[in-house]
Image (cartoon, rainbow, N blue to C red):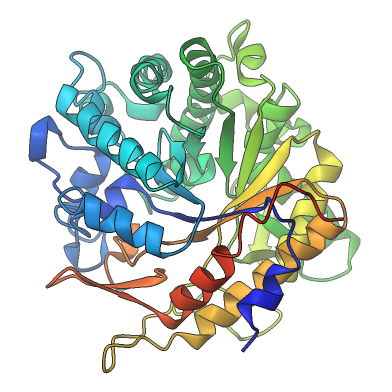
Length: 457
């Protein structure tokens, strides 16, 4: 096993090591203190949508175990905690009255982190849209972008004096394509036009959110977390290389281009523009505001072939087979070089600010045996991917931190509770937390930082 102390020498002394979670995945208490349902509460209640009809009613009961869980984060040796704020707790109907009790909870969370010397990286939206807004069209309605702006303003007015960093959104790709095109996530739409409307309105909400954050809390660095696809051609043929470019425009460009270049990708627009909502005067200027940082969530590569028949919609690609048969328990190919290729490609294409790996991790479902969880494959996954991060830093890429996904096992969206990503095992019957082998290793690594304020390389 790689010694975490010597491994630490591969990173700059002021590199930030953290852990990440999301509100709906861990908080539970879905009806407590004025919270109203989100689209995910509704989605969980629809048969056939979520494995075993699992839901977020209890999850990791984090809402009621906040202090113990903050102690756990402190014990993990990390410098920073990335968490999300639940809109249905703050403005339960999406618009209308603000729920003070919801804000109180995040006050306690932020103050608790501060008291323990843990930096707070808040995400304002991690998929839990207030259900009432679905009646107005949800993200397919332009009005939702303005409802989000007010929500962002409300949160920052209350917490902005104490947050170390804030992201407007987590993974617009999932909100748009998984939620509105493929129906795998809430709200379960399967319609390209709906997805394109959601895409533009999420992008617009991001820009409006940046304005709201800067108006309320100008000192807090603001960013956006994107799960960009590391797209690799299935062969060296020209057709497959062209397919990679189209796939880039669809999976990455639809979000990166408006934010970092001020427009939508060319071929994407040619193919799909007639089904998009009206991009109003000034929209792209709002979306294209300079960010202080950006976050990348990476788990696996995406390999594509050209679809010569051009069946269905842009980007006209087919899935190519994985390069190896090594997979995590969720079935995702393990390919750490995909992270390197992706970061290099994105910095080549876009003028990006400093970055963080805001999520990276692996699903392995080992249980507790005699008080221990031996999840060596997860530990190996972390070593491999962190090795790539250190190489990228050495090559001059401005990566400032890394957040392991996830602090603890939790509600894994459509997979329910059957997939475990945690550094800490959760027994959902008893809510007992057990630090896994990978968690102990990560604790040893993270506790080496910060080591004085210097940059390597």
